[in-house]
Image 1 (tube, rainbow, N blue to C red):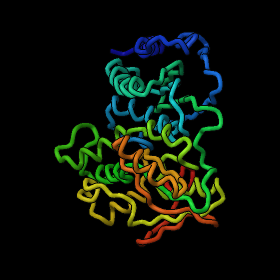
Image 2 (cartoon, rainbow, N blue to C red):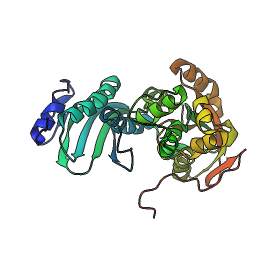
Image 3 (tube, one colour):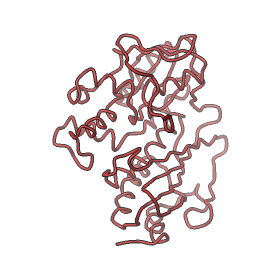
Amino acid sequence: MSLDEFGLIERIARRVPARADIVLGIGDDAALLQPSPEQQLAVTADTLNAGVHFPLETAAADLGWKALAVNLSDLAAMGATPVWCTLSLSLPEADAAWIDGFADGLFALADASGIALVGGDTTRGPLSVSITAMGRVPAAQALRRDGARPGDDVWISGCPGEAAGALRLWQQGRLDVRGVAADAGHERLRERLQRPTPRLALGRALRGLAHAAADVSDGLLADLGHIAARSGVAAVVQADAVPLSAALCGALGDAAAGDCALRGGDDYELCFTAAPARRAALQALAAHLALPLTRIGRIEAGEGVHCAGAPVAGPAHGYRHFAG
């Protein structure tokens, strides 16, 4: 069944519950929202374009989930609690079954994270999804990229590189991203690519523990480089300390797995820095969240990102749009 613009909006809007902090939601020229006192508003936006940020054959539900997840990951990196988001959707055609699948994925994550869709836009065109997400963080407690200090430890959550590993398998024709893979290791990697987990609880818990943080969207070395540049320091990564999952090593081998972990993006883990005195507290936090937190390097005076302990081929920066 095909829909017109207003039918499409209504199909999505009826999935949104009423909330006290939403004075006026979808249906007017703009939403009216009620921020909390003594809170700052963290605002982020991301666009996913077909064939650039996701394979064309990606299932609608997976795309709905991921489009929101990448924005929630930015809020996690700031230590923010998600509250509201808007959605701008460009579609070659408004197919009801596709819209329902997309909404299933988006609202599964929205409901789990406590964020409410409050508006947006729809248009005909190449498949593209843009979400703007907003979160609350107590005044002066937001995690930022510019707070790293010489002497800090560098930490990473989870096991980076798995999403990049899935992308490599797909590029090699060894993974179908549309459905569950028969191989358990391949399926773990596919899930990490298609349905990443924003580290929201970790981000909030790091307020007061971490000095600086960024989510790993462009690659561990690249995103750590953003912290180093904004903080005016150097970062040294011990490559052999970066955790590699058995699924990633089993699928690609140790060398390629290590490259994915250092350079691959799309994992949306958190990379952060903290004083050595916080090691015990961070280990206790890892146990509490049942999420590995691994110390992988240190912050020094200087500039740039340096990798020790293993040869690193190629530049440290990740994917760059318009880079030629």
